[in-house]
Length: 184
Image 1 (spheres, helix red, strand yellow):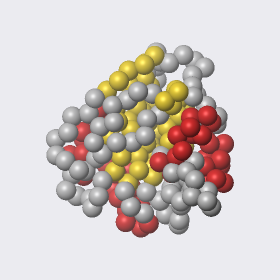
Image 2 (cartoon, rainbow, N blue to C red):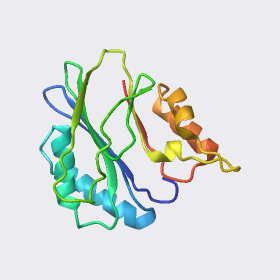
Image 3 (cartoon, rainbow, N blue to C red):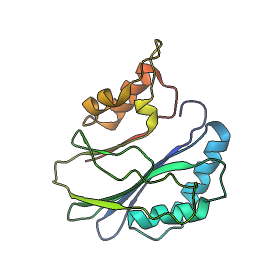
Image 4 (tube, rainbow, N blue to C red):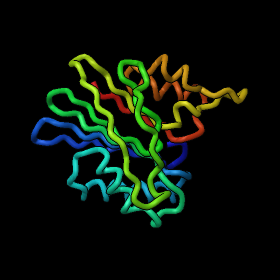
């Protein structure tokens, strides 16, 4: 977190069939209000039995539309045992696959409008692939002169371990919550 509590969140939920569900998001705003919204989102995710990324985003949107001040971005990904990767996105930064930004539909952030349909895109992963999810705190890190960490720097280190990416952005000049999650 950029301060004592944060508005970024992630959940990793493995299933008996060998699949792995990843949900990464960022609540607008900061401080206690954002942290309370994160708590409600995590609770809603724990009660969600769906595994399809687009359906999870629609579920969260239905649950939080009109219930939160502001909005939140979210990316949901399902990695199946055979390496099939399916991602749906709601205004969150696209993840990286082996250092390259994945072309996902942006989608509207959650909580803004009722009954949004989110698109899914699918890739096939190899055993050595790395998928990296980030929050905007990485690209929006700002040095003392006001220069942003930016997308070019983020892309150049996106295939490094999550802690190295987070430390790099943090030391550059953290102003927002930073979340980095790598799946290898």
